[in-house]
Structures are given as structure tokens and as C-alpha cells.
Image 1: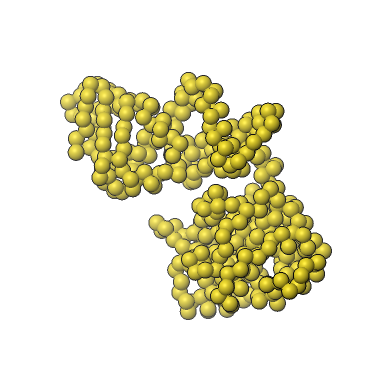
Image 2: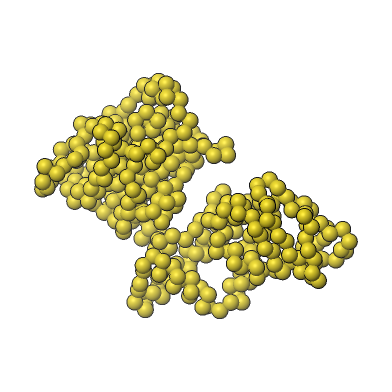
Length: 381
């Protein structure tokens, strides 16, 4: 497949490009630099791979101009696109500098519309400034990723107009981990024995009926309640075959006497203590969940955590979400591996527009990343 040269323009079409294939861009006869003014890429498999990372940059690709010195080496298509997108990112400041402020204004308005957000004039200016600062941080991170300096990409979500302080509210209260309450701990040896019999390389309870729909805690630091109900929902399904969505609001409203703090956070063990007794004003005839007890997993033991996921069900865990004592409670619903990289499957409570449909995958390498195995427990019905 040869590129078609038209004056100083080079138009490249890649109709059959997939992973691992290459495109020829060499020009032996040209002794001077030539300018590529447009690259049209028709590679569905590759585009899908990069869609989340580069979706908003692709329209700019057709306007971005960069110079290549002939001859050009043959490169795999994936890396060609990666380089092209990097060029777009590097051209970004020029685009921002040359375009009017209306471009940013339009992006801001689109973001507000897509998330159902509206502000009065003064508040709108303040929130827009916060949003633009977060947007700049995301773009800097992603530029670092395409340069091989960052291990992950970022994207704007519905929390894009929150300050860091406001965002921390969603992670629960600032509770000193030194005073964490712990209960009975299950034997790691017992978990390992049971897990060996199953020998499950991949576990995903979303596909097994254990997990309810992704929920949204809103602007309330009640992640602890969602993590607690999620684990109980899984155990109810395991015992009865019925998936019942439980009320997090009941925990938020009624468990304060057990040491929880409503929208200001709580330890999940305190929530389990409440579920065991439920001393709240409600119609007991409508209660669908009772537990006898709960067990902690050995602190910091990722193997024990994986064994518990494989043999017991979804597990309540707390993540060190901000490299501080702010802990964010989530539900661990499985684990897997992709491209030689093991990962955990985590259900969050920030709605389905966050992460991967409300879920995220986190590295699983035995190093207790984000403290995922430091505070893990499960209910006993």
C-alpha cells in the first residue's frame, strides 16, 4: 500500500489496519522535508483502542500540521496513531492560543448540559474556573501518558467542577486509621485451602448475578453504606438465588448510634453491627436482610483477599483514595488478568457515568495497592 502524494500533501488511508500491522510511509526520492496536512485513518480496531483516551482530540487531528523528514521509517499502525495523537497534544497549546475563548465556553456549556448542571452567573464563573483548572490537569496528565511518562489516562466526568476539598467529601470522613475497629479475622490458610479447590483464574460476580445495578451516592460521603449493602446483597443472592437491592439510606439514617456519621463517613464494621440489630424506626415486616456476624480478612494479605473473593463473594474494602487518611469504601466484585497484568474489579458508588460504567480495574500485584487489602471484610448471614 503506497501513500498518495499530492503536491506537499500526503493522504494516507488505512482500511485494513489492525494490531501489529504496519503502514509504509517511506519516500526515497524526496530530499527535502514535506508537510502532512491531513491523515485520514480508517482502522476501527485501533480507533476503538484509543477512543476513550483521544476522542476529543481526533477532530483536531485533521487541522493539525506537523513536519516529517523523508525518508520515514516503517512503524506499526498503533504507534503511528499514538505518535499522531501526541502531535495533536503538542499542538494543543497553539490551538488554544489561536482560537477564541468561545471554544472553551462551548465545551463548558456542553459539559453542563450533559450532566444537567446549571448555575447563576457568578457561580457559573467560579465553577467554570474550577472546571478549566481540572481540565488543564487532565490534559497535562494525558500528554505525559502519550510521552510515556504517565501510566494512565484521565478524562472529564461529572465531578469536573468540584474543588479538591469538595471532592474529598465523596470519599468519606477523615478518620484516623490508627483507631480503626477490627473484629474477628478469618484464617488465611482456610481461605487458601478452599480457593485451591476452585482454582479460579478469573472471577467476575457481575456475570454471576451477585451484583445489583451501579448506584450513586450523590454529594454525600456515604460510600461506606454502599460498600456494606453490596456485600450483603451478594450473600443474599448466594444463599437464596434472589438479587435484592438494599437501602443505603436506612444505614445513613439509622446507624449513628453505632458510630457512623451519615454523609460524613463511617467504618463499615460499624454498619455491619447495625445491620445485625437494626434498632431503628421502620416496619420490621419489610426487612429483607439480617446478618449474624462478619469477618475481617488478614490485613494487607492480597492472596487472602483474592481467595475470599473466589470462595465467598463480593467483599467490602476501603481504598486509600487520596494518599492520606481519607478512605473510600467500595465493593470488590472480582479479579482478572489482561495482557499479563492482573487486576481487581471494583464497583464504585458514583453512578454509571464514572469509570468503566461505574466500575474500575486496579492493579493486583501483591503490593497492596491503595491499601485494598488493609481493611477488607464480609458479612455472615
